[in-house]
Length: 536
Image (cartoon, rainbow, N blue to C red; front, side):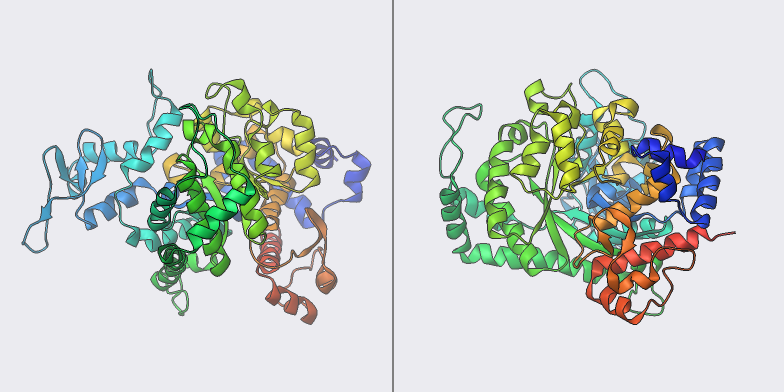
C-alpha cells in the first residue's frame, strides 16, 4: 500500500488509479528490495542499481565520456607532449630515430609518456581533464573548469574514436545498458570554409548582435549555393563516412562478428552530429546543412544537436536566428531528427531575459523532439503552459543531474526534475560527459532516486522512456506513446505479465520486431527487466 501510494503521489494519480495499474508480483518484490537498498544508504543503493536494466543513454558527448586515464595513454602512444603550464596536450616537434621512437618536445613541454613516471604530473593531468579534485576559486567556477577540459585533451587524433566507442560501450554493457546515442562532430572544415566565402544574407548593424533575421527565401538561396559546390558534396560524403567507418572499426576492434565478441558488442550505437553553436551564422548554417545532408544518407547518424556553452555570447545572441535556421531546414529535411541543448542555464550565468525563451523556441521553432538539460524551464515565460506543451506533445527531456550540479550548481529542490514529473513530461536519465564528470549512468540513477525520492517503478519507466524517445528506426513496441501498459497488436499475446517477453515471441511479433530497430530494443529491455525482477 505504501509503495503504490508513493507512485500515486508522484504522478498525481489517485490510490484507486494506482491499484488499477497494480504491477505484477515480481515487480512488487523488486520494489521492496530497491526500497531496502535505498534505506541502507547510497552505497547499497548504487550496488543494487548497478545491474538494473537502463535501456538508453541519449545524451552523451563522446570525447567528454572518455576518462582522462585513457587520453593520457593514447597521447603517449601518439608521441604527444604536455604543456607543463596549461596541462594540455601539444604536438611534438619531431621524433627520435631510436626504436621505439620518442617524441622531441619543445620548450616548456614534456613527453606525455613521462606522466607514467611522474605521479604528480599524472594526477595533475587527470584533474586538468576532468572535475576531479576541482574546487571553485575566485574567477573560476565549475562551469569554467568543465568546458575548459575539452581544449586541453583536444589534441588527440580521431583515429582513437573506435577505442573511445569501445570504452563507453563496455562501460554501458557492464551496467546493463543497451543503446547509446552519442554526440560527435564529424569533419566540417570544407563546409565552414565555403560558408565564410559565400557570406551571410545580411550583416549585423552593430557589434552586439542587433540584426535582421534572414528570411526563408534567403536561407533557401544560401542552401542552393552551398549544395552547388563540389567541395560541399565531398564534405557530406566524408562526414557520413567518418562516422560509418568509426562504427565498423569499433565492431572490428571488439570482434563483434566473431565468436569472441566482447560485451561491448551488445550495446547498439548511433550518432547525433553535433553543430558548434558558438560561431558566426555562416558557419553554423553551413555545418547544420552539412549534417542534415549526412544524416539523410547514413543510417548511423540518426539526428543532429547543437552544442557548446549556451551562455556563450554567440550562443545567446544568435540563439533565435539559429532556431530560424532549424525551422527552415526542418521543412526541407522533415525526416531528420532533432534534439537540442536548451535551458542549460542558471540565473547567475545570464540576465533574466536569457532564461525566458530558449526551451520554448527550441520546441516551437527548432522542432526539437527532445530537450537536453532543460534546467531553466521554470524561469521561462508562462512555464506551466510550457510544461503542458511538452507533456501534450510528448517532448522528452534528457536529465543530466551530475553535470547540472558541476556546471550550473543546480541540485535538489532547485532542479526541475520534480516539476517535469508532476507535469507528466517524459524524462530519461543520461550521463552527458561521464569522463569529465567522473561518473556513470548508475550514478545518475542512484542520485535521482535519493535526491528526488523516486521509486523503482519511476526509474523503470525512465529507462523505458529513453528507448521510447530514441531516434532508432521503426515504430514503438508500445500501443500508445509513453504508456507502457499495452504493446502493439502483433505482440499483444506476449503482453506484460509474469511469463511475458519470452526468448522467442510469437511469429507476428517476431516479424514486427525484425522490422523495427526501436521495437526490438524495447522488447530486449522488457526481457531484461523480467530477468532482473525474477532474480532470487
